[in-house]
Amino acid sequence: MERNQLRYIVEVAKCGNITRAAEKLHIAQPSLSSQIINLERELGVSLFERTKKRVHLTDAGDAFVKEAQHILNEIDHLAELMESFSKLRAGRLRIGALAIMVPLGIPFLISDFSRQYPALELSLMEAGSSELMRFLNAGELDAALVMYTEECHDQLFASHKLIESRLMAIVNKAHPLACRTSLTIEDFRDQKLIITTSNFNLQRLIIDRMETQNIPFKISTRCNQIETCYILADQGMGISFCTESTIGYYPCSNVVYLPVENIPLRAIYLIYKKDPQYYPALKSFIDFITEHYKTNAASSLVSKNSWNYGGTLKP
Image (cartoon, rainbow, N blue to C red; front, top):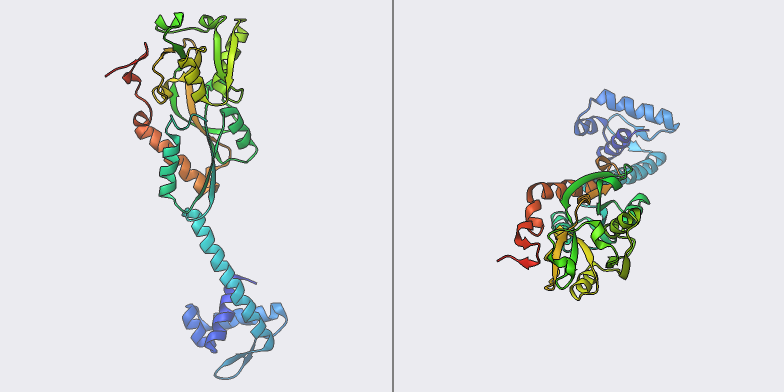
Protein backbone atom coordinates (compact mmCIF):
# COMPACT_ATOMS: atom_id res chain seq x y z
CA MET A 1 0.00 0.00 0.00
CA GLU A 2 1.41 3.36 -1.06
CA ARG A 3 0.63 6.97 -0.21
CA ASN A 4 -0.70 7.65 -3.71
CA GLN A 5 -3.15 4.78 -3.38
CA LEU A 6 -4.50 6.36 -0.19
CA ARG A 7 -4.90 9.67 -2.03
CA TYR A 8 -6.68 7.98 -4.92
CA ILE A 9 -9.23 6.25 -2.70
CA VAL A 10 -9.94 9.42 -0.71
CA GLU A 11 -10.39 11.51 -3.85
CA VAL A 12 -12.70 8.96 -5.51
CA ALA A 13 -14.78 8.87 -2.33
CA LYS A 14 -15.08 12.69 -2.40
CA CYS A 15 -16.04 12.83 -6.05
CA GLY A 16 -18.21 9.71 -6.12
CA ASN A 17 -17.02 9.25 -9.69
CA ILE A 18 -13.79 7.72 -10.98
CA THR A 19 -13.64 9.87 -14.13
CA ARG A 20 -14.03 13.12 -12.17
CA ALA A 21 -11.49 11.97 -9.57
CA ALA A 22 -9.00 11.10 -12.32
CA GLU A 23 -9.32 14.63 -13.72
CA LYS A 24 -8.58 16.17 -10.30
CA LEU A 25 -5.67 13.81 -9.72
CA HIS A 26 -4.32 14.48 -13.23
CA ILE A 27 -4.05 10.82 -14.14
CA ALA A 28 -5.76 8.71 -16.77
CA GLN A 29 -9.10 7.17 -15.77
CA PRO A 30 -8.06 3.60 -16.73
CA SER A 31 -4.92 3.93 -14.65
CA LEU A 32 -6.93 5.11 -11.64
CA SER A 33 -9.41 2.27 -12.00
CA SER A 34 -6.51 -0.21 -12.22
CA GLN A 35 -4.91 1.21 -9.06
CA ILE A 36 -8.18 0.82 -7.12
CA ILE A 37 -8.73 -2.73 -8.32
CA ASN A 38 -5.15 -3.73 -7.45
CA LEU A 39 -5.50 -2.27 -3.96
CA GLU A 40 -8.80 -4.06 -3.37
CA ARG A 41 -7.16 -7.33 -4.41
CA GLU A 42 -4.26 -6.64 -2.04
CA LEU A 43 -6.65 -5.90 0.84
CA GLY A 44 -9.02 -8.75 0.00
CA VAL A 45 -12.07 -6.51 0.29
CA SER A 46 -14.11 -4.21 -1.97
CA LEU A 47 -13.85 -0.52 -1.10
CA PHE A 48 -16.46 0.69 -3.58
CA GLU A 49 -19.85 -0.47 -4.81
CA ARG A 50 -19.93 0.45 -8.49
CA THR A 51 -22.95 1.58 -10.53
CA LYS A 52 -23.05 2.94 -14.07
CA LYS A 53 -22.77 6.59 -13.06
CA ARG A 54 -21.33 6.59 -9.53
CA VAL A 55 -19.33 4.64 -7.02
CA HIS A 56 -20.33 4.32 -3.36
CA LEU A 57 -18.21 3.38 -0.41
CA THR A 58 -18.77 0.01 1.16
CA ASP A 59 -18.58 -0.31 4.93
CA ALA A 60 -14.96 -1.38 4.54
CA GLY A 61 -14.38 1.51 2.15
CA ASP A 62 -15.86 4.01 4.62
CA ALA A 63 -13.53 2.79 7.38
CA PHE A 64 -10.60 2.81 4.95
CA VAL A 65 -11.21 6.43 3.87
CA LYS A 66 -11.43 7.67 7.47
CA GLU A 67 -8.10 6.06 8.38
CA ALA A 68 -6.50 7.00 5.06
CA GLN A 69 -7.46 10.66 5.55
CA HIS A 70 -5.96 10.58 9.03
CA ILE A 71 -2.73 9.05 7.71
CA LEU A 72 -2.50 11.60 4.89
CA ASN A 73 -3.00 14.43 7.37
CA GLU A 74 -0.23 13.02 9.56
CA ILE A 75 2.08 12.69 6.56
CA ASP A 76 1.41 16.31 5.60
CA HIS A 77 2.06 17.38 9.18
CA LEU A 78 5.30 15.40 9.23
CA ALA A 79 6.41 17.01 5.97
CA GLU A 80 5.67 20.47 7.38
CA LEU A 81 7.57 19.63 10.56
CA MET A 82 10.62 18.45 8.63
CA GLU A 83 10.47 21.59 6.49
CA SER A 84 10.49 23.62 9.71
CA PHE A 85 13.68 21.87 10.76
CA SER A 86 15.29 22.31 7.35
CA LYS A 87 14.43 26.03 7.31
CA LEU A 88 15.31 26.48 11.02
CA ARG A 89 11.77 27.26 12.11
CA ALA A 90 12.15 24.45 14.65
CA GLY A 91 14.93 22.57 16.39
CA ARG A 92 17.45 23.11 19.15
CA LEU A 93 21.12 23.92 19.47
CA ARG A 94 23.23 23.36 22.60
CA ILE A 95 26.31 25.54 22.65
CA GLY A 96 29.25 25.48 25.04
CA ALA A 97 31.52 28.47 25.58
CA LEU A 98 34.49 29.47 27.67
CA ALA A 99 34.14 31.16 31.02
CA ILE A 100 35.88 34.14 29.39
CA MET A 101 33.24 34.29 26.69
CA VAL A 102 32.08 37.81 27.63
CA PRO A 103 35.46 39.48 27.05
CA LEU A 104 35.69 37.56 23.78
CA GLY A 105 32.28 38.84 22.67
CA ILE A 106 30.82 35.34 22.32
CA PRO A 107 27.42 36.09 23.98
CA PHE A 108 26.85 38.90 21.48
CA LEU A 109 27.54 36.57 18.57
CA ILE A 110 25.15 33.95 19.94
CA SER A 111 22.53 36.64 20.51
CA ASP A 112 22.90 37.82 16.91
CA PHE A 113 22.50 34.24 15.70
CA SER A 114 19.38 33.81 17.85
CA ARG A 115 17.82 36.94 16.39
CA GLN A 116 18.46 35.59 12.91
CA TYR A 117 16.79 32.27 13.79
CA PRO A 118 14.33 33.15 16.59
CA ALA A 119 12.42 29.85 16.42
CA LEU A 120 15.46 27.79 17.36
CA GLU A 121 15.71 26.67 20.96
CA LEU A 122 19.19 27.72 22.09
CA SER A 123 20.90 26.70 25.30
CA LEU A 124 24.31 27.88 26.47
CA MET A 125 26.76 26.20 28.86
CA GLU A 126 29.74 28.05 30.33
CA ALA A 127 32.79 26.05 31.43
CA GLY A 128 36.50 25.52 30.82
CA SER A 129 37.74 24.03 27.57
CA SER A 130 38.43 20.53 28.94
CA GLU A 131 35.00 20.24 30.51
CA LEU A 132 33.29 21.51 27.37
CA MET A 133 35.11 18.94 25.27
CA ARG A 134 33.96 16.19 27.63
CA PHE A 135 30.34 17.33 27.34
CA LEU A 136 30.69 17.51 23.57
CA ASN A 137 32.16 14.02 23.44
CA ALA A 138 29.26 12.72 25.57
CA GLY A 139 26.70 14.21 23.17
CA GLU A 140 25.45 16.78 25.68
CA LEU A 141 26.55 19.70 23.49
CA ASP A 142 26.25 20.25 19.74
CA ALA A 143 29.12 22.71 19.41
CA ALA A 144 31.60 24.47 21.66
CA LEU A 145 33.92 27.43 21.48
CA VAL A 146 37.07 26.40 23.30
CA MET A 147 40.64 27.54 23.73
CA TYR A 148 43.49 25.11 23.35
CA THR A 149 46.77 24.82 21.51
CA GLU A 150 47.46 22.89 18.32
CA GLU A 151 49.36 20.28 20.32
CA CYS A 152 46.20 19.55 22.34
CA HIS A 153 44.09 19.12 19.21
CA ASP A 154 41.81 16.09 19.44
CA GLN A 155 41.15 14.48 16.07
CA LEU A 156 37.81 13.13 17.33
CA PHE A 157 36.38 16.60 16.84
CA ALA A 158 35.86 18.57 13.69
CA SER A 159 37.19 22.07 14.25
CA HIS A 160 37.52 25.56 12.83
CA LYS A 161 40.23 27.84 14.14
CA LEU A 162 38.67 31.25 14.69
CA ILE A 163 41.33 33.48 16.27
CA GLU A 164 44.78 33.26 17.81
CA SER A 165 46.17 35.16 20.77
CA ARG A 166 49.41 35.34 22.75
CA LEU A 167 49.67 34.22 26.36
CA MET A 168 50.19 37.17 28.71
CA ALA A 169 51.37 37.38 32.32
CA ILE A 170 49.43 39.80 34.54
CA VAL A 171 52.01 41.44 36.80
CA ASN A 172 51.48 44.09 39.43
CA LYS A 173 53.39 47.31 38.64
CA ALA A 174 55.28 47.08 41.93
CA HIS A 175 56.62 43.61 41.11
CA PRO A 176 60.33 43.39 40.12
CA LEU A 177 59.37 41.70 36.82
CA ALA A 178 57.09 44.57 35.79
CA CYS A 179 59.97 46.43 34.15
CA ARG A 180 60.51 43.65 31.62
CA THR A 181 59.14 43.70 28.07
CA SER A 182 58.49 39.93 28.02
CA LEU A 183 58.89 36.91 30.29
CA THR A 184 59.84 33.24 29.99
CA ILE A 185 58.69 30.24 31.99
CA GLU A 186 61.98 30.43 33.94
CA ASP A 187 61.02 33.89 35.20
CA PHE A 188 58.18 32.36 37.23
CA ARG A 189 60.63 30.37 39.39
CA ASP A 190 59.60 30.63 43.05
CA GLN A 191 56.96 33.21 42.16
CA LYS A 192 53.49 33.26 43.70
CA LEU A 193 51.00 32.35 40.98
CA ILE A 194 47.28 33.04 40.83
CA ILE A 195 45.65 30.42 38.66
CA THR A 196 42.21 29.18 37.76
CA THR A 197 41.02 25.68 38.56
CA SER A 198 42.15 22.62 36.57
CA ASN A 199 39.23 22.85 34.13
CA PHE A 200 40.98 25.73 32.37
CA ASN A 201 43.62 24.67 29.84
CA LEU A 202 45.33 28.05 29.94
CA GLN A 203 46.51 27.70 33.53
CA ARG A 204 47.30 24.00 33.20
CA LEU A 205 49.61 24.79 30.29
CA ILE A 206 51.74 27.05 32.50
CA ILE A 207 51.89 24.56 35.37
CA ASP A 208 52.70 21.64 33.04
CA ARG A 209 55.56 23.60 31.46
CA MET A 210 57.04 24.50 34.83
CA GLU A 211 56.76 20.97 36.17
CA THR A 212 58.32 19.53 32.99
CA GLN A 213 61.26 21.91 33.33
CA ASN A 214 61.51 21.28 37.11
CA ILE A 215 60.95 24.94 37.90
CA PRO A 216 59.69 25.42 41.47
CA PHE A 217 56.69 27.69 41.93
CA LYS A 218 54.06 28.58 44.49
CA ILE A 219 50.34 28.65 43.90
CA SER A 220 49.03 31.39 46.15
CA THR A 221 45.42 31.27 44.97
CA ARG A 222 43.13 29.07 42.89
CA CYS A 223 40.05 30.79 41.46
CA ASN A 224 36.94 29.64 39.65
CA GLN A 225 36.58 32.97 37.85
CA ILE A 226 39.08 34.65 35.53
CA GLU A 227 37.95 38.04 36.82
CA THR A 228 39.08 37.13 40.34
CA CYS A 229 42.56 36.30 39.03
CA TYR A 230 42.78 39.73 37.38
CA ILE A 231 41.72 41.56 40.53
CA LEU A 232 44.07 39.64 42.85
CA ALA A 233 46.98 40.32 40.50
CA ASP A 234 45.93 43.96 40.46
CA GLN A 235 46.14 43.92 44.26
CA GLY A 236 49.63 42.44 44.26
CA MET A 237 48.72 38.95 45.46
CA GLY A 238 50.81 37.27 42.76
CA ILE A 239 51.20 36.76 38.99
CA SER A 240 48.28 35.55 36.92
CA PHE A 241 47.76 34.83 33.23
CA CYS A 242 45.38 35.70 30.42
CA THR A 243 45.23 35.77 26.66
CA GLU A 244 45.99 38.93 24.75
CA SER A 245 42.45 39.02 23.39
CA THR A 246 40.95 39.67 26.85
CA ILE A 247 43.25 42.54 27.82
CA GLY A 248 41.29 45.68 28.55
CA TYR A 249 37.99 44.07 29.43
CA TYR A 250 38.72 44.01 33.17
CA PRO A 251 39.69 47.47 34.49
CA CYS A 252 42.91 46.78 36.40
CA SER A 253 45.02 49.91 36.68
CA ASN A 254 47.82 48.47 38.83
CA VAL A 255 49.14 45.81 36.43
CA VAL A 256 51.19 45.42 33.29
CA TYR A 257 50.64 42.71 30.69
CA LEU A 258 53.78 40.94 29.52
CA PRO A 259 53.90 38.36 26.72
CA VAL A 260 55.24 34.94 27.71
CA GLU A 261 57.85 33.73 25.24
CA ASN A 262 58.09 30.28 23.65
CA ILE A 263 54.48 29.39 24.42
CA PRO A 264 52.23 28.34 21.51
CA LEU A 265 49.61 30.85 20.51
CA ARG A 266 46.32 30.31 22.29
CA ALA A 267 43.68 29.63 19.67
CA ILE A 268 39.89 29.76 19.90
CA TYR A 269 38.33 26.85 18.06
CA LEU A 270 34.74 26.07 17.18
CA ILE A 271 34.52 22.30 17.63
CA TYR A 272 31.77 19.72 17.06
CA LYS A 273 31.34 15.98 16.48
CA LYS A 274 28.09 15.68 14.55
CA ASP A 275 28.15 15.83 10.77
CA PRO A 276 26.61 19.26 9.99
CA GLN A 277 24.99 18.04 6.78
CA TYR A 278 22.49 16.10 8.92
CA TYR A 279 21.86 18.93 11.40
CA PRO A 280 20.67 22.18 9.74
CA ALA A 281 20.81 24.23 12.95
CA LEU A 282 24.39 23.18 13.64
CA LYS A 283 25.45 23.84 10.05
CA SER A 284 23.91 27.32 10.13
CA PHE A 285 25.66 28.09 13.42
CA ILE A 286 29.00 26.93 12.06
CA ASP A 287 28.55 29.02 8.92
CA PHE A 288 27.47 32.05 10.98
CA ILE A 289 30.39 31.92 13.42
CA THR A 290 33.11 31.15 10.87
CA GLU A 291 31.89 33.87 8.53
CA HIS A 292 31.90 36.38 11.38
CA TYR A 293 35.48 35.66 12.30
CA LYS A 294 36.52 35.59 8.67
CA THR A 295 35.21 39.09 8.02
CA ASN A 296 34.97 40.78 11.42
CA ALA A 297 37.59 39.18 13.67
CA ALA A 298 39.44 42.42 14.19
CA SER A 299 36.36 44.24 15.43
CA SER A 300 35.37 41.45 17.83
CA LEU A 301 38.60 41.63 19.84
CA VAL A 302 40.43 44.28 21.81
CA SER A 303 42.93 45.87 19.47
CA LYS A 304 46.49 44.78 20.20
CA ASN A 305 47.73 48.17 19.11
CA SER A 306 45.70 49.97 21.78
CA TRP A 307 47.95 48.62 24.52
CA ASN A 308 51.42 49.52 25.68
CA TYR A 309 52.61 46.31 27.30
CA GLY A 310 54.11 48.39 30.06
CA GLY A 311 50.49 48.53 31.24
CA THR A 312 49.37 51.96 30.09
CA LEU A 313 46.50 52.42 27.70
CA LYS A 314 47.59 54.56 24.78
CA PRO A 315 45.44 57.61 24.06
